[in-house]
Length: 375
Image (cartoon, rainbow, N blue to C red):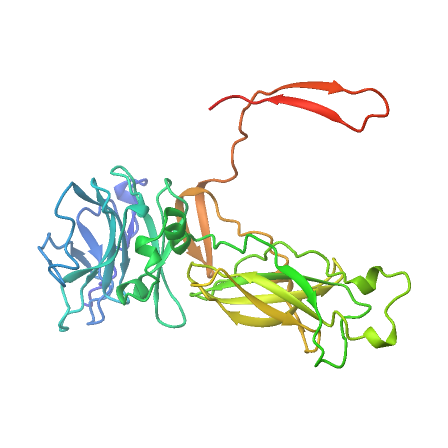
């Protein structure tokens, strides 16, 4: 008689044992449903006991030797035969490690360090919920949350290959957080614009037009930030002249020098947008390479290109909707969902005493003394 290896399949602790279906069970202690490709897929097997494994590199990948260590989260990838685990260390040397379980390979049954830094800020009593996403470049993206810190993400493949900027290890606390945050930081300052005259440019395509600029960051994993604040409206002297420019000065103010802020974070590109007036749709001007070693860079705009209208999904997103902290997360239909989350900030409670001294009519001076609380 044939044996149905898929029985039982589901845990049912609610119904009476006498009415259980053939594929249900009342207990599943220390068992797992196998996913092997050797013909045993779907077979219930006992969970194997603990086994001592060693670091791939005894020096670089070793667990912290001082302080108390405890695993506070695990993310398993059956398809890639590896396990990512999150380690709390009482000395602040929190880390993320990968255990490799690929029988027949040289690196099987060893673990290696993905990232170790105090900025992870794990807690001894925390539970870290993590999910693994493999992108189009076959890189492992680890998303994790612990209801303590902001939801985070790290490209484990890049971290293992030491392809991150050194600021992820040695930068300031905000700089290190920029590398790990799920909510990608947009440009915080508007572009700075200034008119200039190029005598070699025979045509002035800026005359009789008003322009406004904004830009966004494109991160190393292909993620787009929200747009920066919009620049001031580009108004030249010819726009405000009551008589206009004469024929001999038509080339005046024929270029706009736009200054953009670079990012020290994991930003690969900067996209500059322009629109006519201070409303309406944005058009994509140019894609620039981010220069993390320079504070800013400049681009000269002369309105002499063919600019494609940018999709609303890129330009009308004013912020990324990511909670301040979350206790659960999951991926569904290629979207990231959070549960048991907290968003927004509480109002700051302050008391202020105001006293006004009004001066006699005809005086343009009004003095207001404000007493703010200390601390």
